[in-house]
Length: 51
Image 1 (cartoon, rainbow, N blue to C red):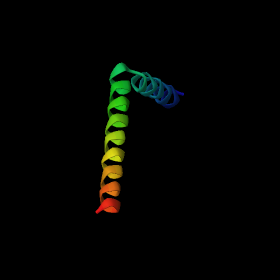
Image 2 (image 1 turned 60 degrees about the vertical axis):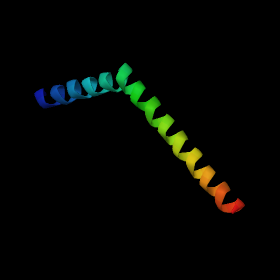
Image 3 (image 1 turned 180 degrees about the vertical axis):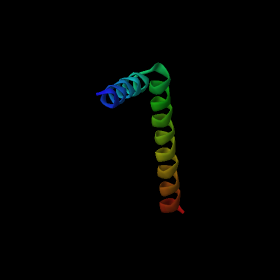
């Protein structure tokens, strides 16, 4: 019973960490970087088509 209780407590702690403001900020940052990478890729594609 105790190992299950420990596992459940660890799961709750992990879920609590996943919804922190820091986690949301990191997700937003990753999204911004992904958008920037896509923009650079699009610019390179346009340049290759124009040149």
